Length: 380
Image 1 (spheres, rainbow, N blue to C red):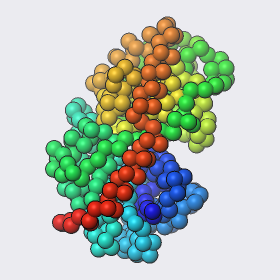
Image 2 (image 1 turned 60 degrees about the horizontal axis):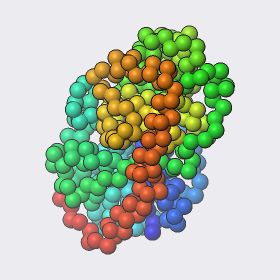
Image 3 (image 1 turned 60 degrees about the vertical axis):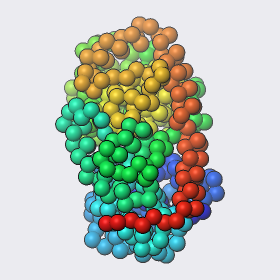
Protein backbone atom coordinates (compact mmCIF):
# COMPACT_ATOMS: atom_id res chain seq x y z
CA UNK A 1 0.00 0.00 0.00
CA UNK A 2 1.24 3.47 -0.91
CA UNK A 3 0.54 6.21 1.67
CA UNK A 4 1.00 9.90 0.83
CA UNK A 5 1.71 11.60 4.17
CA UNK A 6 1.22 15.36 4.41
CA UNK A 7 2.80 17.04 7.40
CA UNK A 8 5.89 18.95 8.39
CA UNK A 9 9.48 18.15 9.35
CA UNK A 10 10.30 21.32 11.27
CA UNK A 11 10.30 23.18 13.58
CA UNK A 12 10.47 20.44 16.19
CA UNK A 13 7.14 19.78 17.91
CA UNK A 14 4.74 16.94 18.66
CA UNK A 15 3.37 17.03 15.12
CA UNK A 16 6.86 16.46 13.69
CA UNK A 17 7.57 13.61 16.11
CA UNK A 18 4.21 12.02 15.34
CA UNK A 19 4.85 12.12 11.59
CA UNK A 20 8.36 10.71 11.92
CA UNK A 21 7.43 7.88 14.29
CA UNK A 22 4.30 6.77 12.41
CA UNK A 23 5.80 6.89 8.93
CA UNK A 24 8.96 5.09 10.06
CA UNK A 25 6.78 2.38 11.58
CA UNK A 26 4.79 2.08 8.34
CA UNK A 27 8.02 1.74 6.36
CA UNK A 28 9.17 -1.00 8.73
CA UNK A 29 5.94 -2.87 7.96
CA UNK A 30 6.52 -2.73 4.22
CA UNK A 31 4.41 0.25 3.20
CA UNK A 32 5.51 2.71 0.55
CA UNK A 33 5.45 6.22 2.01
CA UNK A 34 5.70 9.52 0.18
CA UNK A 35 6.27 12.46 2.52
CA UNK A 36 4.81 15.81 1.44
CA UNK A 37 5.95 18.57 3.76
CA UNK A 38 6.07 22.33 4.03
CA UNK A 39 9.41 23.98 3.29
CA UNK A 40 10.62 27.54 2.88
CA UNK A 41 12.88 27.76 -0.12
CA UNK A 42 15.68 29.55 1.69
CA UNK A 43 15.80 26.97 4.51
CA UNK A 44 17.43 23.56 4.22
CA UNK A 45 15.52 20.60 5.64
CA UNK A 46 16.97 17.57 7.35
CA UNK A 47 16.96 14.52 5.12
CA UNK A 48 14.84 11.69 6.42
CA UNK A 49 15.86 8.33 4.95
CA UNK A 50 13.71 6.03 2.79
CA UNK A 51 11.09 8.62 1.82
CA UNK A 52 10.07 9.94 -1.53
CA UNK A 53 9.73 13.61 -0.60
CA UNK A 54 7.81 16.52 -2.07
CA UNK A 55 8.30 20.06 -0.74
CA UNK A 56 5.20 22.25 -0.50
CA UNK A 57 6.24 25.93 -0.51
CA UNK A 58 5.27 28.07 2.45
CA UNK A 59 5.82 31.63 3.58
CA UNK A 60 6.01 30.83 7.29
CA UNK A 61 5.76 27.87 9.62
CA UNK A 62 5.89 27.50 13.38
CA UNK A 63 5.06 24.86 15.93
CA UNK A 64 1.48 26.17 15.89
CA UNK A 65 0.49 27.06 12.32
CA UNK A 66 1.73 27.24 8.72
CA UNK A 67 1.17 29.82 5.98
CA UNK A 68 1.52 28.28 2.49
CA UNK A 69 2.21 30.24 -0.67
CA UNK A 70 -0.54 30.95 -3.19
CA UNK A 71 0.74 28.20 -5.51
CA UNK A 72 0.99 25.55 -2.80
CA UNK A 73 -2.44 23.99 -3.41
CA UNK A 74 -1.66 23.58 -7.11
CA UNK A 75 1.72 21.99 -6.33
CA UNK A 76 0.07 19.66 -3.81
CA UNK A 77 -2.61 18.56 -6.30
CA UNK A 78 -0.01 17.97 -9.03
CA UNK A 79 2.15 15.95 -6.65
CA UNK A 80 -0.71 13.70 -5.57
CA UNK A 81 -1.76 13.18 -9.16
CA UNK A 82 1.79 12.15 -10.09
CA UNK A 83 2.38 9.96 -7.02
CA UNK A 84 -0.91 8.02 -7.41
CA UNK A 85 -1.04 6.89 -3.75
CA UNK A 86 -3.68 4.52 -2.46
CA UNK A 87 -4.53 6.86 0.40
CA UNK A 88 -3.65 10.31 1.75
CA UNK A 89 -3.00 10.88 5.44
CA UNK A 90 -2.74 14.51 6.53
CA UNK A 91 -1.22 15.34 9.90
CA UNK A 92 -2.99 18.68 10.09
CA UNK A 93 -0.69 21.67 10.49
CA UNK A 94 -3.28 24.44 11.01
CA UNK A 95 -2.76 25.65 7.48
CA UNK A 96 -5.25 26.95 4.88
CA UNK A 97 -4.41 23.82 2.87
CA UNK A 98 -6.27 21.82 5.51
CA UNK A 99 -9.51 23.27 4.14
CA UNK A 100 -8.92 22.60 0.43
CA UNK A 101 -7.32 19.15 0.76
CA UNK A 102 -10.67 17.29 0.89
CA UNK A 103 -11.68 18.85 -2.43
CA UNK A 104 -8.33 17.96 -4.02
CA UNK A 105 -8.60 14.35 -2.88
CA UNK A 106 -12.24 14.14 -3.98
CA UNK A 107 -11.25 15.21 -7.50
CA UNK A 108 -8.49 12.58 -7.56
CA UNK A 109 -10.72 9.91 -5.98
CA UNK A 110 -8.30 9.40 -3.07
CA UNK A 111 -9.40 8.34 0.43
CA UNK A 112 -8.38 10.99 2.94
CA UNK A 113 -7.49 10.57 6.61
CA UNK A 114 -6.63 13.43 8.96
CA UNK A 115 -4.98 13.50 12.36
CA UNK A 116 -6.18 16.47 14.40
CA UNK A 117 -3.52 17.54 16.92
CA UNK A 118 -4.41 20.87 18.58
CA UNK A 119 -4.18 20.84 22.39
CA UNK A 120 -7.25 21.59 24.44
CA UNK A 121 -8.68 21.84 27.93
CA UNK A 122 -12.25 20.66 28.02
CA UNK A 123 -13.11 22.87 31.02
CA UNK A 124 -11.83 26.14 29.45
CA UNK A 125 -10.44 27.42 32.74
CA UNK A 126 -8.12 30.11 31.34
CA UNK A 127 -7.51 32.34 28.34
CA UNK A 128 -5.18 29.81 26.70
CA UNK A 129 -7.68 26.97 26.86
CA UNK A 130 -10.50 29.24 25.66
CA UNK A 131 -8.40 30.26 22.65
CA UNK A 132 -7.69 26.63 21.81
CA UNK A 133 -11.40 25.85 22.04
CA UNK A 134 -11.99 28.44 19.30
CA UNK A 135 -9.63 26.42 17.09
CA UNK A 136 -11.84 23.38 17.59
CA UNK A 137 -14.97 25.39 16.85
CA UNK A 138 -13.41 26.77 13.68
CA UNK A 139 -12.18 23.40 12.40
CA UNK A 140 -15.22 21.26 13.21
CA UNK A 141 -17.25 22.09 10.06
CA UNK A 142 -14.25 21.35 7.84
CA UNK A 143 -13.35 18.08 9.56
CA UNK A 144 -16.74 16.79 8.46
CA UNK A 145 -15.36 16.89 4.90
CA UNK A 146 -12.60 14.37 5.66
CA UNK A 147 -13.39 10.69 5.19
CA UNK A 148 -12.03 10.04 8.68
CA UNK A 149 -10.34 12.09 11.39
CA UNK A 150 -8.05 10.51 13.98
CA UNK A 151 -8.03 11.99 17.47
CA UNK A 152 -5.99 10.90 20.47
CA UNK A 153 -8.62 10.44 23.18
CA UNK A 154 -12.29 9.79 23.81
CA UNK A 155 -12.77 13.23 25.42
CA UNK A 156 -11.33 14.89 22.29
CA UNK A 157 -13.75 12.83 20.19
CA UNK A 158 -16.69 13.83 22.40
CA UNK A 159 -15.74 17.50 22.10
CA UNK A 160 -15.71 17.37 18.29
CA UNK A 161 -19.01 15.49 18.18
CA UNK A 162 -20.59 18.23 20.30
CA UNK A 163 -19.21 20.74 17.79
CA UNK A 164 -20.93 18.94 14.91
CA UNK A 165 -18.41 16.49 13.46
CA UNK A 166 -20.27 13.24 12.56
CA UNK A 167 -19.40 10.47 15.02
CA UNK A 168 -18.87 7.95 12.22
CA UNK A 169 -16.03 10.08 10.82
CA UNK A 170 -14.03 10.13 14.05
CA UNK A 171 -11.78 7.38 15.39
CA UNK A 172 -9.64 7.34 18.53
CA UNK A 173 -6.06 6.12 17.98
CA UNK A 174 -3.83 7.51 20.75
CA UNK A 175 -0.24 8.58 20.49
CA UNK A 176 2.02 5.59 21.02
CA UNK A 177 5.57 5.15 22.25
CA UNK A 178 8.19 2.59 21.24
CA UNK A 179 8.40 0.67 24.51
CA UNK A 180 11.55 -1.15 23.43
CA UNK A 181 13.49 2.11 23.12
CA UNK A 182 11.71 3.97 25.89
CA UNK A 183 12.09 1.60 28.80
CA UNK A 184 13.64 1.49 32.28
CA UNK A 185 17.38 0.95 32.18
CA UNK A 186 20.77 2.11 33.40
CA UNK A 187 21.57 5.82 33.50
CA UNK A 188 24.59 7.78 34.70
CA UNK A 189 22.55 10.95 35.08
CA UNK A 190 22.61 11.18 38.87
CA UNK A 191 26.33 10.42 39.00
CA UNK A 192 26.96 13.16 36.40
CA UNK A 193 25.00 15.68 38.44
CA UNK A 194 26.16 14.46 41.85
CA UNK A 195 22.61 14.33 43.24
CA UNK A 196 20.20 11.83 44.77
CA UNK A 197 16.93 13.04 43.23
CA UNK A 198 16.19 14.23 39.69
CA UNK A 199 12.97 15.93 38.59
CA UNK A 200 12.41 16.57 34.86
CA UNK A 201 10.28 18.75 32.62
CA UNK A 202 10.59 18.00 28.89
CA UNK A 203 8.79 20.08 26.30
CA UNK A 204 8.48 23.54 24.81
CA UNK A 205 9.08 26.59 26.97
CA UNK A 206 5.91 28.39 25.92
CA UNK A 207 2.96 30.04 27.70
CA UNK A 208 0.57 27.12 27.21
CA UNK A 209 3.05 24.76 28.87
CA UNK A 210 2.83 26.73 32.15
CA UNK A 211 6.46 25.98 33.00
CA UNK A 212 6.76 29.01 35.28
CA UNK A 213 4.23 27.47 37.69
CA UNK A 214 6.65 24.57 38.16
CA UNK A 215 9.68 26.85 38.43
CA UNK A 216 7.93 29.07 40.97
CA UNK A 217 6.99 26.09 43.15
CA UNK A 218 10.51 24.66 42.99
CA UNK A 219 12.16 27.97 43.90
CA UNK A 220 9.86 28.49 46.88
CA UNK A 221 10.53 24.99 48.20
CA UNK A 222 14.32 25.31 48.31
CA UNK A 223 14.75 21.58 47.66
CA UNK A 224 18.42 21.56 48.63
CA UNK A 225 21.66 20.48 46.90
CA UNK A 226 20.74 16.79 46.59
CA UNK A 227 17.81 17.48 44.21
CA UNK A 228 17.85 19.04 40.75
CA UNK A 229 15.14 20.14 38.36
CA UNK A 230 16.10 19.63 34.70
CA UNK A 231 14.36 21.69 32.02
CA UNK A 232 14.72 19.93 28.67
CA UNK A 233 13.52 21.93 25.68
CA UNK A 234 13.43 25.39 24.23
CA UNK A 235 10.87 27.99 23.29
CA UNK A 236 9.92 31.66 23.33
CA UNK A 237 9.86 32.01 27.13
CA UNK A 238 13.21 30.36 27.85
CA UNK A 239 15.33 33.51 27.77
CA UNK A 240 12.76 35.36 29.91
CA UNK A 241 12.62 32.71 32.64
CA UNK A 242 16.24 31.59 32.86
CA UNK A 243 17.59 34.70 34.69
CA UNK A 244 15.08 34.23 37.53
CA UNK A 245 15.27 30.44 37.91
CA UNK A 246 18.85 29.27 37.59
CA UNK A 247 21.46 26.88 38.98
CA UNK A 248 21.52 28.71 42.30
CA UNK A 249 17.97 27.37 42.79
CA UNK A 250 18.87 23.84 41.68
CA UNK A 251 17.41 24.36 38.20
CA UNK A 252 19.43 23.26 35.17
CA UNK A 253 18.42 24.40 31.67
CA UNK A 254 19.53 21.78 29.14
CA UNK A 255 17.88 23.28 26.06
CA UNK A 256 16.68 21.21 23.14
CA UNK A 257 18.36 17.79 22.99
CA UNK A 258 18.27 16.26 19.52
CA UNK A 259 20.04 13.06 20.53
CA UNK A 260 17.22 10.64 21.28
CA UNK A 261 19.44 8.28 23.26
CA UNK A 262 20.48 11.14 25.53
CA UNK A 263 16.83 12.04 26.13
CA UNK A 264 16.14 8.42 27.03
CA UNK A 265 19.08 8.40 29.45
CA UNK A 266 17.68 11.51 31.15
CA UNK A 267 14.23 9.95 31.48
CA UNK A 268 15.70 6.71 32.82
CA UNK A 269 17.62 8.69 35.43
CA UNK A 270 14.63 10.79 36.45
CA UNK A 271 12.68 10.09 39.63
CA UNK A 272 9.77 12.33 38.67
CA UNK A 273 8.48 13.72 35.35
CA UNK A 274 6.33 16.85 35.59
CA UNK A 275 4.02 18.34 32.96
CA UNK A 276 2.19 21.49 34.18
CA UNK A 277 0.45 22.41 30.88
CA UNK A 278 -2.64 24.59 30.63
CA UNK A 279 -3.67 22.85 27.38
CA UNK A 280 -2.55 19.57 25.84
CA UNK A 281 -3.52 17.01 23.25
CA UNK A 282 -1.96 13.74 24.33
CA UNK A 283 1.62 14.47 25.34
CA UNK A 284 4.17 12.16 23.76
CA UNK A 285 6.75 13.43 26.24
CA UNK A 286 4.52 12.25 29.09
CA UNK A 287 4.16 8.81 27.51
CA UNK A 288 7.94 8.60 27.06
CA UNK A 289 8.51 9.47 30.72
CA UNK A 290 5.96 6.87 31.80
CA UNK A 291 7.50 4.21 29.54
CA UNK A 292 10.93 4.86 31.09
CA UNK A 293 9.53 4.26 34.56
CA UNK A 294 9.44 7.79 35.97
CA UNK A 295 6.74 8.78 38.44
CA UNK A 296 4.57 11.23 36.52
CA UNK A 297 2.67 14.35 37.55
CA UNK A 298 0.58 16.09 34.88
CA UNK A 299 -2.40 18.40 34.68
CA UNK A 300 -5.81 17.22 33.59
CA UNK A 301 -5.60 19.35 30.44
CA UNK A 302 -6.36 17.55 27.19
CA UNK A 303 -6.09 13.78 27.47
CA UNK A 304 -3.19 13.67 29.93
CA UNK A 305 -5.49 13.12 32.90
CA UNK A 306 -7.02 10.20 31.01
CA UNK A 307 -3.55 8.71 30.51
CA UNK A 308 -2.83 8.83 34.24
CA UNK A 309 -6.05 7.06 35.25
CA UNK A 310 -6.08 4.03 37.56
CA UNK A 311 -3.09 5.09 39.62
CA UNK A 312 -0.67 5.55 36.71
CA UNK A 313 0.31 8.99 38.01
CA UNK A 314 -0.85 12.07 39.88
CA UNK A 315 -3.30 14.39 38.12
CA UNK A 316 -2.95 18.12 38.85
CA UNK A 317 -5.60 20.78 38.38
CA UNK A 318 -4.55 23.53 35.97
CA UNK A 319 -6.01 26.07 38.43
CA UNK A 320 -3.55 25.36 41.25
CA UNK A 321 -0.42 23.86 39.71
CA UNK A 322 2.13 25.76 41.79
CA UNK A 323 0.46 25.17 45.17
CA UNK A 324 -0.12 21.48 44.44
CA UNK A 325 3.51 20.98 43.43
CA UNK A 326 4.69 22.67 46.62
CA UNK A 327 2.88 19.92 48.51
CA UNK A 328 3.81 16.99 46.28
CA UNK A 329 7.46 17.51 45.36
CA UNK A 330 8.80 17.24 48.94
CA UNK A 331 7.05 13.85 49.25
CA UNK A 332 9.24 12.43 46.49
CA UNK A 333 12.31 14.02 48.03
CA UNK A 334 11.73 12.62 51.52
CA UNK A 335 10.05 9.31 50.60
CA UNK A 336 12.26 7.88 47.83
CA UNK A 337 10.30 4.62 47.68
CA UNK A 338 7.33 6.45 46.13
CA UNK A 339 8.89 7.18 42.73
CA UNK A 340 9.77 3.59 41.69
CA UNK A 341 6.35 2.30 42.80
CA UNK A 342 4.55 4.94 40.74
CA UNK A 343 7.00 4.49 37.87
CA UNK A 344 6.15 0.80 37.55
CA UNK A 345 2.44 1.63 37.42
CA UNK A 346 3.10 4.29 34.79
CA UNK A 347 4.99 1.90 32.54
CA UNK A 348 2.31 -0.77 32.92
CA UNK A 349 -0.32 1.75 31.81
CA UNK A 350 1.68 2.51 28.67
CA UNK A 351 2.14 -1.20 27.93
CA UNK A 352 -1.59 -1.75 28.20
CA UNK A 353 -2.84 1.21 26.14
CA UNK A 354 -0.17 3.35 24.49
CA UNK A 355 2.39 1.26 22.62
CA UNK A 356 3.38 2.44 19.16
CA UNK A 357 3.20 -1.10 17.80
CA UNK A 358 -0.41 -1.58 18.86
CA UNK A 359 -1.51 1.80 17.58
CA UNK A 360 0.16 1.29 14.19
CA UNK A 361 -1.79 -1.96 13.89
CA UNK A 362 -4.99 0.00 14.54
CA UNK A 363 -3.95 2.52 11.88
CA UNK A 364 -3.38 -0.34 9.41
CA UNK A 365 -6.87 -1.64 10.13
CA UNK A 366 -8.30 1.83 9.47
CA UNK A 367 -6.46 2.13 6.16
CA UNK A 368 -7.72 -1.28 5.03
CA UNK A 369 -11.29 -0.42 6.00
CA UNK A 370 -11.19 2.84 4.08
CA UNK A 371 -9.89 1.16 0.95
CA UNK A 372 -12.65 -1.46 1.09
CA UNK A 373 -15.43 1.11 1.43
CA UNK A 374 -16.71 3.27 -1.45
CA UNK A 375 -15.38 6.82 -1.48
CA UNK A 376 -17.68 9.07 0.53
CA UNK A 377 -19.33 11.94 -1.29
CA UNK A 378 -18.31 15.13 0.45
CA UNK A 379 -20.32 18.35 0.44
CA UNK A 380 -18.80 21.82 0.59
